[in-house]
Amino acid sequence: MTSRLYLDWNATTPLRPEARATMVEAMDVFGNPSSVHAEGRAARALIERRELQRLANRILPGEELAHERFVHDHRPQ
Image 1 (cartoon, rainbow, N blue to C red):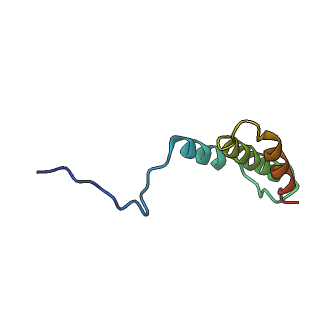
Image 2: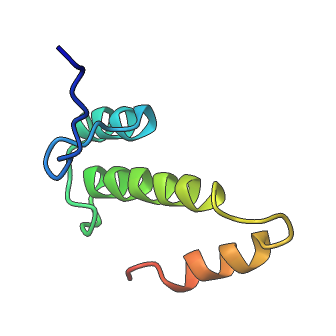
């Protein structure tokens, strides 16, 4: 019997370890990130940390200042 190559990853694509770790961390944080109470601020902080981390992995050297301006200018108020 020949081995089978599975190409239908529409609903079963394996998660990258970084994505899985982020999901597990987020499941322990309760609160609406749009709210101003402590739980909401904690949820918002987690989202912002992960967004910065994700974007930092895509930035070329020398683009840090533009990145910081973009993130701070486009944060939900």
